[in-house]
Length: 232
Image 1 (tube, helix red, strand yellow):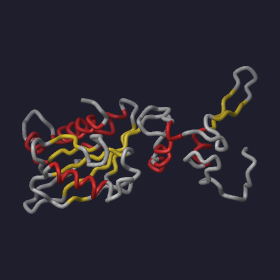
Image 2 (cartoon, helix red, strand yellow):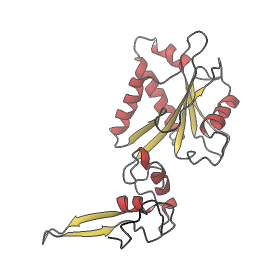
Image 3 (cartoon, one colour):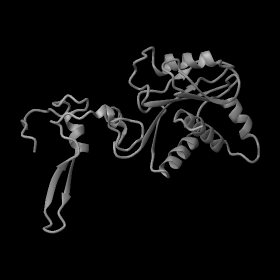
Image 4 (cartoon, helix red, strand yellow):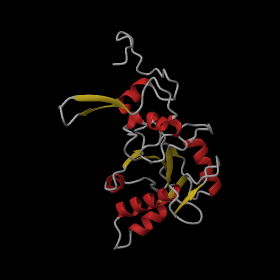
């Protein structure tokens, strides 16, 4: 199809130097269509591996991930023509008196389901995508400490970490000063791209008879994430 050497694996080459490799442009850029009159198949390209396109500015599904970022997350099922959202979930270690700070499995499934109903694929990195860390227990975390978690456990000390701007950073901690859920700035750039929910507050609310624990956690986690999307 491309007149390349079939004995050479060049699938990860980027011959047009536009930031995404040969194989990704072929998979997502090539499509076949059938002519209705003579029933013959024709081939066309949205992206051509040999034509430079500025993929860092292209976002056909308008999900906030440009095509370079779609390529970087393609190992986890990202699709440039379908909205995706990626979240890194970090949690606080258990406390000395059995205090737990984690997102229930039932809450994770609720989140996937409710986003799916809006045709958005919800990708939660709870350790399955190379992220997710356990933060040492702290009875009460200040705003400055939340920023340090972001720096040390999300960026791992690298302000140019490629995951910043691709993944949202959602913490589950034991207790934060002020209120049990809010967005915050990680200290890199002007944006509120991180958020926390506090298990102490979630458990208190879940004890009320009109609430279910998995819904309490899922709704709070989704609510605060919405603020990182600019929804207020």
